[in-house]
Image (cartoon, rainbow over all chains, first blue to last red):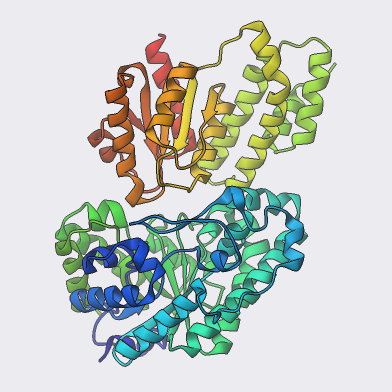
Length: 337
Length: 214
């Protein structure tokens, strides 16, 4: 059974030979391949080479084009700070939507515009699909409505907009869904077999705002990606305990949880057959613990979430994670179903 | 007479307009600015912190309360400065060099301000030299360093090392926080304390100040 078949069978609730393994690797992958992260984020052949190398070495079932949240914002003219060896970051004080009125005339960027950062991701997906698409599931990546809204408006400002100007937030999230639908479609056309939606900012808002503003637009985005032909992995970094029930209503085939939500609690909020992924503590367990500690933490997640479960940490594998601990995660996945 | 309980309610409910108008009214009637802060605004922000910690409030509600508090503080600050009133302590805060993620730092800064501290907020991506300058210039009691990324955590260590080189390390307490930061990491880099969240940071800052001025 190939890694691709393993993941797809899991989300169709068909038998698998072992647990699928889908950790998010970015800086860890770049370090493993001996490349600087600035190059990884800028240049898709660098990203693809590192993804393929790390997936092969540690037995992952997928490769991913995720790199940083700034691609869409960069293509809309947003101010980005680049670093030699860490992810580029959006400069909030110079947000694209510093003035709300700019939204009315903000164009939808073409994800295939030559030289753009979105095109670089689409090309990365195409390269990964050519190199490994028959064996591994190729994962494209887009920002969720709340995350992209925060990227464009500024996270601090958006938090107040929810209360000060609800119609603006709805118009902003509607724009975000339209943009990300096109971006996802371009990646699916290029060979992505699944689309990850990263919506970290949604973990900050609490259940009332999540259900009123975020969930309806996440549902729309998930439905649009399904229509374009791919399943969805929804990843919300941070504490999602109070919004977990809503995450299970988005229609995403995989809900990928950060470590702050105990897996048993997540399973109670999102009953079978929702597939759950995660969620050992990436820093305190995966990076700083021992191989036995990693296996024990994964065992706890698996017991709480199985059978509809995929192994992985709660968030990105941190830079500096010992290879022995990564091997322990792989061995665990290979020893369970 | 201004109903000062409404000042407490306005801060707690994030109603900036009411917080400002009640404060104006109270000042016009000759209320003591320090009393408005210590009896109404600090307890309101303590309650905001409590609600945040037990997940009744989330980031939008906390920022809204902080905005209401700041609106009232704008009116009170000049009067406090003129009267020579001292804050609970002075805290220099910022995200460390290379880290542009500032919402956690902003929550901590707001809660410290709500706790009666004077907060010198250096913003995001702050080089060690800027922390040192601010400590020296403002005679700060505490420095609060924030990092969201594992990759920027080493900048916390470099900042503390720069304090040592500049000869100011013994003059300030250093507290650190941020999603990937752990108490163990705080000890390893020689910080004086670790705050898991904004309310813990306020409690820690109060401990530092009380230990220095028992």
